[in-house]
Image (cartoon, rainbow, N blue to C red; front, side):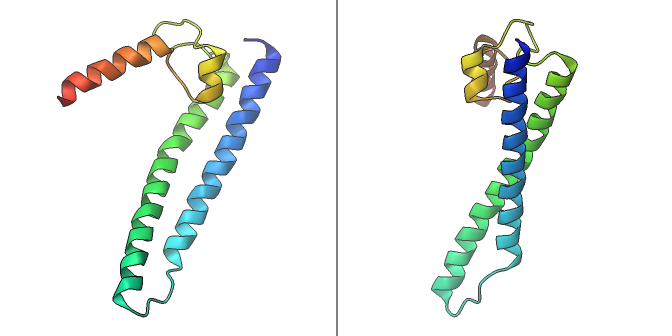
Length: 119
């Protein structure tokens, strides 16, 4: 991967990190400032919204370490290469998922293995 491509992905990852931190903060703010609920319907609606915001915080919190690992791989010069095979991950995959650690083939094999353990 050339210097311009690495710079592009570093920018993408830093933007993703900033957006992710904002989503977490916004969701936590909404959770910590509940609206005044005047009836049971309002309380039920608030409970549903709270569950949604908790899921957002959980999902986004899991993404942050992946972003940080990708940024570290850029710094180390390992970004864009499959952690298992060492093969290039591919620009198309990295553009759609800049935190990708594995090439599509390895990821597919790992997902198949997971299916067998779940079934």
